[in-house]
Length: 487
Image 1 (spheres, rainbow, N blue to C red):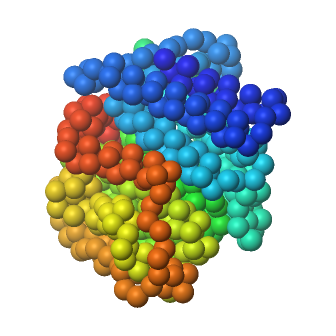
Image 2 (image 1 turned 180 degrees about the horizontal axis):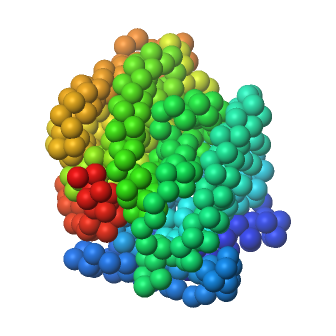
């Protein structure tokens, strides 16, 4: 099952690379590949046993014998609830990205869609890998299409932005590579689950090397310097994937590798990470309110939400962990919806400047509905799925430290301010210079991009325990050792 999930996008990318097809065929091949991938991921969801706290759909074979000393590198992939929902988030995001790119008519479509398909395969590999070497392969493979997609199809400042992105990620990747090599030598294994698992290690330097790579990708304050440029200069669908899916790889790495392998070090540095996350949450929320463009608001909102997720992780308790994972799913879908909607707005108007927009919802009920839902779920209106996940994070924060809970609660209030400003500036008021009277409502093809994401948010709201029941036990397996060390 997981091998098929890895190979289908690669097969689609290979076909696009070797067969000189036209635009329509390239779009059709890419869309068929991601839809088939989504169907397989839904099959995995249906086969997943919610009461089983162990790894499922396991495939484990020796890949490279005695890779470092006596430690084998293994093709070891599997899913628990955390991996399952990160894979589902990936396939949902990729369907939206491919559909948006097709609607926008990106140039050099074979290369563009091929890059997206390779990116999907890399993300699924890193979200299912149970071997640190295999995870690192997925982590680095993810970067290659991202560099190309940003550097070739990005905005006018794409070269500077791509170089900045490369520098940040290269530093983190090299630190993690060194840490993996040392870890393999010391532990005699690269597996993080199964009978030959690495086990608990005690090294502040190795923990920080892993954490730095993951926090750059999340990103956690103050390692977010690459984000504003990357989110503004990338195409809307790549920005949506950066915010909705790729940022979750950082939080996933903390939960899957950093905390369970180095529990004592995570416990010792808990206060540092909570403090950085609190500062980042407040800082990003204030900057989001001051942004002059729609992308900027959602970009800094994403920084704040990832900091909130880190607070849930480093609360080191069950409520915080459950809330953080559920918020990863919720924020992923909300970010995908917000950035893809911004992309559709840019196709209509040629800008995302809030001063140039306005009145888009006047006489356009479809625009009004999808923009309002995206805004309400982003600000976690009571009753929404994001409200549930943020509430769990806040309960976990209060359990960890009352001060952390109070500050985080106050900072979340700022989300209502900047997201209502975002929605009002785009949807209401007088028609902006780029939104003339009579601007048409969402077309059928555009609804095909927006409506599935809205439906996912509604399903998560109607049945939040569909996620939380399946991530049950994540705390016991991954975070509990760090929680015990902190007591």
